[in-house]
Amino acid sequence: MQDIPHRSQTLTPADSEPPTLDQSATVRALCLLALTAFLLVILAVCTTFSNTPYPTIFILAISLAILVSFYILMSLIEMRLARKLMHLKSSLLIWAVLLGGLGFFARIDAQADINGIFHVDPSLLPMTLAAASFMHALAKLEPLFYLISVLSFPIFILCCEANRKGKRTAGHAICHLSNCLVFLITGLLVSEVMAKEERRREVLYRFAHLADFNTFSPCKNVQPDEFDVLYLDSSRKRILTAPKVTTSENIEPEKYMLLKYVQVPKTFRTLECEYKVPGKS
Image (cartoon, rainbow, N blue to C red):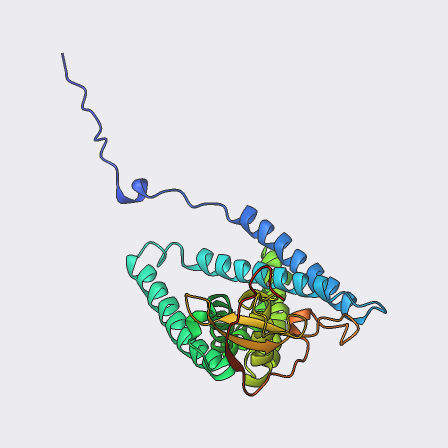
């Protein structure tokens, strides 16, 4: 009886590769996110130019639009590089080095900012130090925001031209147009608020009063209706006093509270806290 030869079941490299994923669903989802970012920008503009400004809605809408656009940008990069670079461990190492270096230098500048404003150890204001580090990190990325905005527009034109020739690139075009608009707005906000030393210090001064200073002091040698205090030691004996910040909505009503103008004092008084003894006037 003649033996029937069996075919070899060995898989070729082509057979072992995973099938190519259909990216159309991902592009549709990113397109919806881009439209959402557009609507958030329109909402922010409407609240700014309305008869009754809503600065809180403005800052929330712009912040969400920026986060959505960052997600869209990173998703587009991942879609382009996923089959070539994303599986390499060196890519993660490069991202870690870049982000670590950015955070390191941003923290150094943030410490200098806080020391220049309050003339104390920056570690005494941990929340303000974190906010200052974030602001300096964005300030260092300012040229990148404008670069993304500038590059996104010609890519949008190319996608539109490809879509006109029959290719399915309309979703990519919407994503790049959204990035062009939102990253331009992001760059302008960073330039006006975070990159300017005077404006940045005003924001940090207001933030410090909200996050690190105490609005009420038990010290009888401090008027609690005029000054906020910052404790300078663990025994809560030495304090630094700063004039209270005006929070009236009638002053620059179109601006968010942290972005309003405030005069930052040149010097601050340090005192020995005299605690009130119960039963004594």
